[in-house]
Image (cartoon, rainbow, N blue to C red):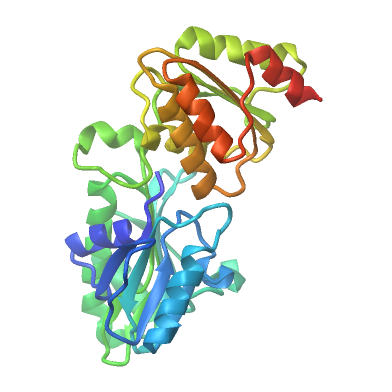
Length: 352
């Protein structure tokens, strides 16, 4: 589960890692932030800076322009629902620091480089520091960071950062914690300028407090073929299986099985679309819903919202019948989304 930057930084702060002063604004709401500031798109992907999703604003006019343009900017298929505005940090230097799961060595690994920022990937792989991190060697890891960053006077601070990051990583069941850049300010402070964090979905039972924008997809989502070209969404196990079978019988390759159940909500359905978007070969999604407990117009609203948030969503082949299907048909028609009478018609149109 990928966290947005503001979610990751909230966790960092609770673990005692310094971050910039900031405020979160939903897209479409008025922004009031001391200037100069940095406006950041909140989408679950990297490359925001190069894509134009991070802008510095020094005047009210620049702030409004940055807010308007970033709010309307898709980045790798994601549209932001919120923007993060942060104080502009006076920067002396930028470093790279992350914790990852090294599966080949069965350890938590600290990875660092003295040159951080948006060009970190251009650094030679041989120049990165790699330390198998435990709760017993955070002091040595901090000393290694001080040497790597050429900050001998910050050795004790970096030891403390290494210890806090290790605790943050393990207590939150993280699989990735990346600070890029770790900023050395002109005042000599070390601050997390940006943060990516991924958490282990399967550990959710240990964390009733988890309430992030990306919701955990139901266990009723099953990957069938990572290279599948057609994704499926249905409600009820029988109908979901029949939908997959129909795709297979048509000579197409289903990527997944998904039963959204009777308690489908907009957030749950949109989360399902996000999961489907991870299949790189999928070029069509078949949506087959028979409204009973779940209302067809709820699914229709979720489809419309998914189209807004995921502009690169594949072609949709939609069949909705049953509870509130007339209302659903009207909603889809207003957004120029076709609705098919039955699954056979969906498949026929898909193959044409």
